[in-house]
Amino acid sequence: RPFDYDDLPPDGSTHPGWQDHADDEEGSWYTPICIANRLPPGKDLKQVSEECFKDHKNVYVPAGSEPPAPLIDGQTLARAAWDAVTIPQPSVETKITTGDGITNATVVGMDTWIWATGDTPSQVRVTASAGSLSATVVASASGLRVSAPDSVPDCHGFGIPWTQGAAEGSSNCTVEFTRSSAHLGGTTPLTVSVGYDVAWTATDGTSGTLDPITTTSTTDLPVAEIQTINRDTNH
Image (cartoon, rainbow, N blue to C red; front, side, top):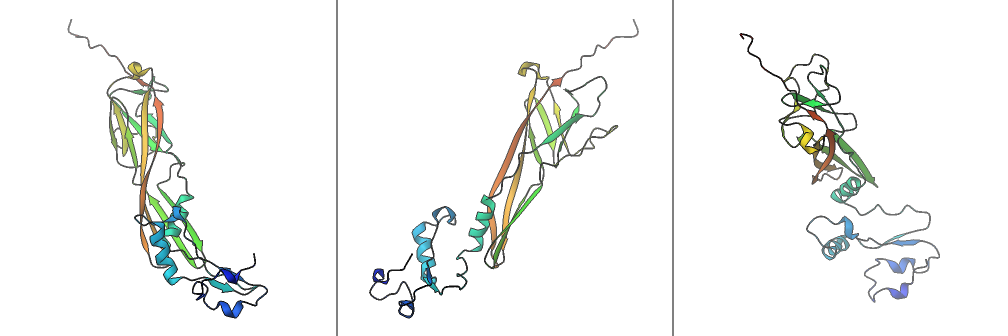
């Protein structure tokens, strides 16, 4: 829309050099703005606006010329990039170390292997750019966190896919159930979560961290119990 120079303050301080363009029929003034939902932690809109506008004034751009570069810092760009990311919930498979005569169930007192499938990332990386500035955000996780009723988890990684003949103790992510799931309605809820630490770096030399994030999913496992009878063979 046409700019109304009558709206300027008497000294014209908000639009440096406006007199040189007052008679231009084309051209644009670009005004920096602050968006409240992109503010750095601990700062309010007024504070950020005052700091920004102290060094960044309205800029006149003649018709056909490139607009000024966006006024954005590395942290703000990193937050904008991270806001666009959705990390999928963890997806896992499970298997007991022996399947003799048992299907679709795990067993009390034996290791149940747990491992992440390809849909569960150990690292997520995203990059955003605004003008000449780029910011890269990396979210990293060290492994699965496992919990379930009546169980003893032992998980220190993303697990190893079970293979035929695999021995107990050879996986870095297992859970041992201490009770069958009969009292829970037939299945035991296995909760798996992944915690990600989030860090960013930008091409303006800045870097930092963002709030960590945790993704969670629940899988219902039938837990069976094998009954055995010991007999004295001497009688």
